[in-house]
Amino acid sequence: MIKLQKSTFLDEMATKEKLCAFIMRSDQLSMGDECKRFEEVFSAKQGRRYAVFVNSGSSANLILIQALLNLCRLKKGDIVGVSALTWATNIMPIIQLGLVPYLIDCEIDTLNVSPNTLAVALAAEPGIRCIFLTNTLGLSDDIYAIRDICIEREVLLLEDNCEALGSVVAGRLLGNFGLASTFSFFVGHHLSAIEGGMVCTDDEELYEQVVMCRAHGWDRNLTKAAQERLRKKNGVDDFYAKYTFYDLGYNVRATEINGFIGGLQLAYLDHIVEARFDNFIRLNGVINGNNNLTTIRHDHMDIVSSFAIPVIMAEGVDVNKFKVIFSEADVEIRPMIAGNMGMQPFYRKYVKGGAAQPNADYIHRNGFYFGNNPELTDDELVLLADLLTH
Image (tube, rainbow, N blue to C red; front, side):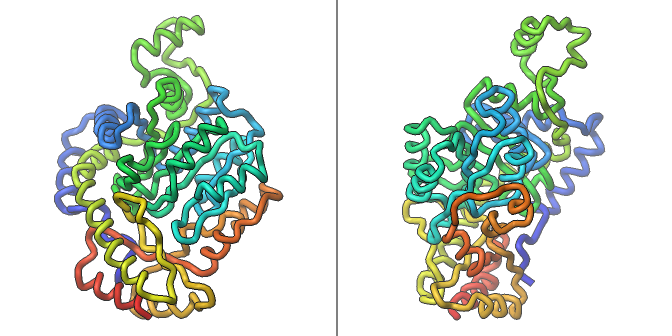
């Protein structure tokens, strides 16, 4: 069977051996120096000033939104534009924290929000205060133009980059276009720490607030200068500072185990991205030659760090035919992420109204994806290419 992913980690046995040795020699496994080191090397690799490591990409989304509320850059009731084709925990924190999601349609040939679909959304709902953009499956539309629209309209731009670690558009890594971005290191993602997530930003005030949101709203993990500033402002002495909580927060800390694995796996990231991109180019080329399928447009991108290979039917083609073909070949497939989020039961329960998303609807009903990972063999790639010729 060709599964969505083959291994827990790249170079799995060597990683497990190093992990076992690390556990045996460690005095502390709760969040500490390994997590800090991973933050430092990841922020350097991503090219952002700050990175905050947490227990999942979903938690990264949650505390980013909470931090913006704590800073009053967002307020309860604000409308947040979100990609219609995305994952549930990109939208759930918006609802949970008293904001209002507004679904923005995607383009079928990029799977992503475009300047055109964003303009349509802003015309229909001019009260949109923030855009939480999902860089879907490692792809992007014209994100430079999207950034410019957000700057012009004074709309906060955030990126959920959990599926696009390593993708590059016109010399810039995805995840570096907005105020902040989130990443996932779940076992099925580009870089596995088993579980884990990251918030990245260049904004010092936001960084400090995210650090506090990660652990209870206290100041223990801030710099000494930031601690002194907070304590002086709030009249807190050093004794009571240990149990002083400055704003709303959670406990979404990662462990030293996750931090250690993340640091090990980061050394493989260039290889991981290169292999995923090569696979994508090879298989999307086959799709391009099949009139039954829709080609994914990526000529504006330098690197597609492909999370998975999207298969979208051309108009009038029965998607069930291809589902059967892949199933009979023992290839694991999934819906296109969670499809159009407007069709999800939780969304219909909590959000009323909003515009139609015809392109996300089409992808929901006429598409699926199969796994792309750096461990696919040439024989497997030949098989997958053959399945795409039907």
